[in-house]
Image (cartoon, rainbow, N blue to C red; front, side, top):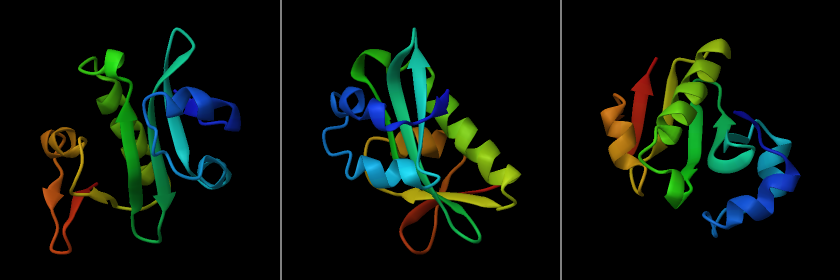
Length: 118
């Protein structure tokens, strides 16, 4: 795992076509990428907030799914949140990542988000 780079954009768009503004993501706390044999197979885009880290995107390449990539990315985001001194990770309660988050201890918050208190 490593920080995402501008050079990762083309490879990520293979499996995340609606990735958004990659240059902006890279310039902030932004992306963390998972690698398998030096190939980018997953991404977690996160943004710092005063009391939590917002997980904006969690995606894994189709051929790498069910192999623990998403869980490893999520573990890394949670460790970073703790190291940054915040006590929660929050994410949208829609999308393909929801089952992984619920299985990882996230719960539905009153505002429609998923949240895990750390």
